Amino acid sequence: MAERVIITMACTVCKNRNYYFDKGKKQEGKLELNKFCKNCGKRTLHKETK
Image 1 (spheres, rainbow, N blue to C red):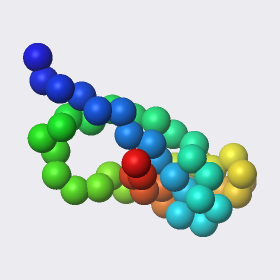
Image 2 (cartoon, rainbow, N blue to C red; image 1 turned 30 degrees about the vertical axis):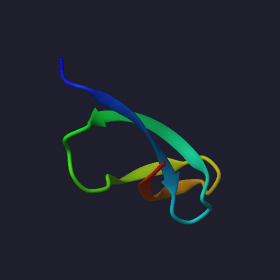
Image 3 (tube, helix red, strand yellow; image 1 turned 180 degrees about the vertical axis):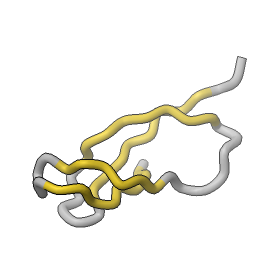
């Protein structure tokens, strides 16, 4: 079985950690997605954090 890691997505504007995803260990690079932030009240860029 492929190993999966749970990652946390944080808003780049308010730094609030809103979303959790899993991704494969072998994937390279940080994940960046435009997601809705409840704290900001709008769609903002969310980046992968530790």
